[in-house]
Image 1 (cartoon, helix red, strand yellow):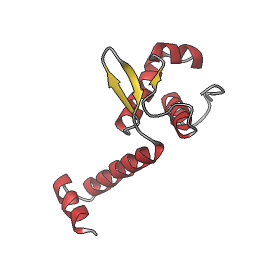
Image 2: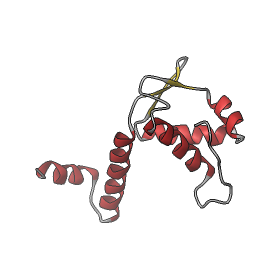
Image 3: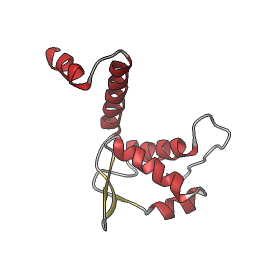
Length: 115
């Protein structure tokens, strides 16, 4: 994440750009599973963005399974970008099912029937 440049004119929001930079650092091996990330305030200072922007990006990556938050222990890398892709696609599939009138339980039944 050494050479992160955020583009305020990009169609991607700032928190999405921050999340992408951290995701890329994990993919490139700069941040490996088990390693701790700097505090959000420190990341925000380096990136010259609001701490809330960084926190939003970190929560996004937590929801993707890449990061784990532990009170008093900080933020730890726990996943890989491959896991992140699977989680993202699963969320998209769930949303598609809901948009087409399926319940979560019905989607699970469909997935379990596929071999």
